Length: 309
Image (tube, rainbow, N blue to C red):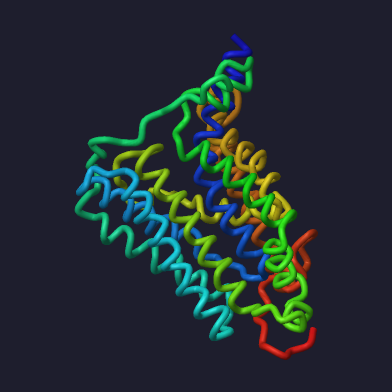
């Protein structure tokens, strides 16, 4: 019974942690390039409503996922223009995108409130891996395809960041943009593309909520997950592989809040991720993000070409 409880808890924690992981991975890429994007919540919401509306009207899940990714990337490109090209305050720009994105998503989805998706994403098993004791039933049996995709994306991002020239270029743009500029790297272009990529993953996280985890539209469907993803980015120390157990931990908090209602107040366990998020965001805001342990040196700092650090 205890083993079954552990397996079920891990499986549900992974399912809940999937959108957090996707959004956090996108933010890791953006922040590794030196750009903070507080618009994650807004991008998730817009990705969710785009995916839901496209799926409900066309019946095509691949098209719905594509729409969510494109909307997330498009909104992120707006942040990139403001923060990277125009060199405006990154924090204010991101907050504006969250406020506007959440409001616009709720407005667009107003006509769909309470309507379930006719053909939501189906659960699938991974052959062979699903039969592995403990880990198989927990992680590779009865999960959504986007959950497996998130785990693969985490591995690919780690590989690119730390094992390729492209990754070195991106990290240099976030650590020492002046050195990157001297080496002939277009810092603004690298940062712009990193932010857009991160927005696409945030939109994908929103699509997971609307097409799989909660396949019925409701206002504020992301319920603050974008903010938690920002905190998760810091807890993972800007490392894509460390983001996986961090997302699992956050998912476990929510899962256990229902299972341990007779032992601990559910409000306590539900509140913990938000408390950690507040502390993490306070950390990144301190001294423009540079006070955080392991944070890229130029995180949150606009770069003007030819400028010396």
